[in-house]
Image (tube, rainbow, N blue to C red):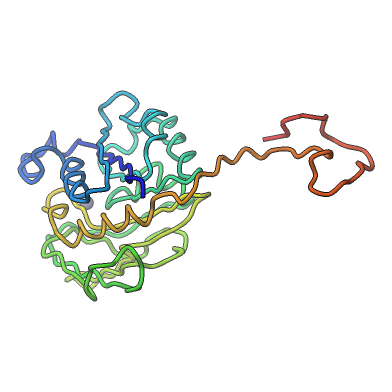
Length: 259
Ligand code: ZN
């Protein structure tokens, strides 16, 4: 099996502004997430941040990425639209996308979902219990019936997403709310996983269960094949069975067609 090429994209803003976040993630949250994934021998992991040219997501980097992880919160609006469009195109071709925590409001997630992706929330350091909905799913291998995070930000329903293809986790919070905290979708040829935990003021990306889920999710989301969707015109003479063109045509021979 070829190595899985992973890019961890981090907004890298809170780490610069808040001493607490810097203490938890001295090299940045993206580096901590990448370190966890790098424990897998067949993962080739790199990082990219908002502050780099093209946010670290050049055409070439994306072409060499099988799975992209996305963490953003305070600066969704600063992500350039042409980079978002580039990521969307790659997902449609087959690149896996794992959207983390407050990435629910990122431009790329909202674009791919087509809904507002809003939710209810509270920052009170309460306990979260993540229930596994589908124990047979590749993303939860090695995870028990549930796992807990002692201190988290609460995200609650309603979560304004399209109905997921698969429900992987449901969270219960100490304050009583519940949330669809692990969901999958397909968009084009690409697989998408949203995973809720990851508030910047708690050491969540050091948690062994969270790390296990992210490793599993990268394996699940890797492309099985790439589909460059060019919408080709098949001329009469290339039809699988011999046919004769009949009637009037709107398109000229060899024309690209309307987009
Ligand atoms: Zn948060």
